[in-house]
Image 1 (tube, chains in turn red, purple):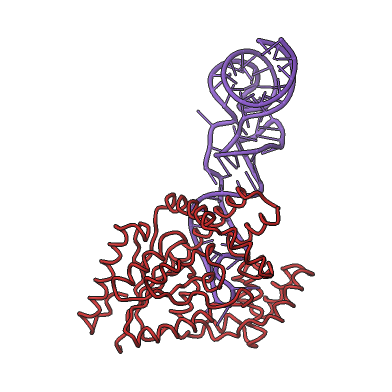
Image 2: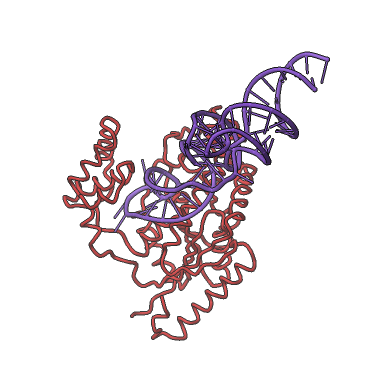
Length: 324
RNA sequence: GCCGGGGUAGCUCAGAGGUAGAGCGCGGCCCUGAAAAGGCCGGCGUCGGCGGUUCGAUUCCGUCCCCCGGCA
């Protein structure tokens, strides 16, 4: 009812050209870029996470990059809080927020909100993991079946992380997770999202993925990994599990040939892209474009679409809901 | 040319006289605080070609083609 500020979210699989498009949109429409990517929030992990270059960041202001150190845990809830903070600042300055979204969960957490569920408990998780090791994952599934039957039905007995989270919520909250999830969530207020999606043809996307992995290596990715390890960073830290970092670490340990590591990275990236596509297909209200974000035709089409949307929003404040 | 080994899914290969399987790949899907994580589902095939034996052959026999070793 009150005037909602528009917000642009560009979704799409890795290597589809979201960053380039985000910059272009921001430049032409008076915006700034907000990364929505679970890996780019980590400092020092730059090349492998395809973080926008410093040159790109000079062209347009970027937010929500480099938020935490590699030792820190960062969650969807953290993302939501940080993003809302940034959005407040942009709104005050009349700047259009342009999200480049690789991590669908983070976008959903921001726009739709999260349940009022307890945060992680590292101690409890450690204990549950130990029990799973000792007695098998099925043991946890039986526990979940007692605590929260509906969740136990939905979560496979082989899906350890989800079982652990569900048990954690039940125990910490003293109520079944499925019950908490039924409560209404606090969606983002004061903003009306416009979602555009990039969906290049699969074969072209995969070719781009393969090429980009090689380009990252040419840009010094291996040296980046070597440097991080030389700093004394524990190889067990989470960012070392990101695609590529684990494979390159294996290569540096002498376990695999570089060429083999590259193939593994390319394949893992392809699988990741596929999962992203599946997730984004489910995202409501996305206007899809078939090309890459750095392709002039696709970018032009997106820009035309966006200006029509923004104009429409201005022209009809009473709006008729404009078919969200 | 001869002697061996082999030609089965996109790849690596298992199998058996009743019409085919595994891993990987690939595809589809799920997801409410570590999501670049984790999980679920799917065989996608002239069993090298052609003949023969048989109720029935991809499996047995013959022949041809191709690949890999060795000897020439």
